[in-house]
Image (cartoon, rainbow, N blue to C red; front, top):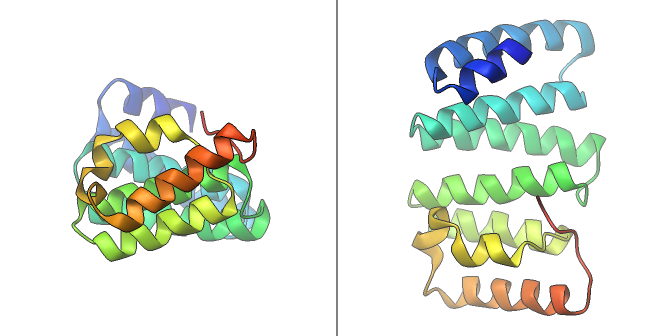
Length: 153
């Protein structure tokens, strides 16, 4: 997988995608679908698709990673929260405001607390101005002020 990540980081997204697909197939064969390594590879596949502006495909991979992470790592694990947040971002970019808000609500309910990301992430621009988004942001700010929640990196 390291070579695939080098390719991703150097902008060779199509090659990274192909290599990650191969890694995923091997991991599923070795570990089964419900394994943290499988979730990580799915997350990396989502990131590649996002960089290729294939937001629907990215959302699908983030969703698969999220389901594994929720069951294996738990809903409040930082990796789970990161996937949940990124799924909301992809849905926002796809124009699915209701779906994005639902997923963002799930992430916030599970402990997502990165105020800066929610305030500045351009991928969430489609949600700004919506009272539900404002409410979620206020909740995260309040939790951060009290020192609660899990800050994402």
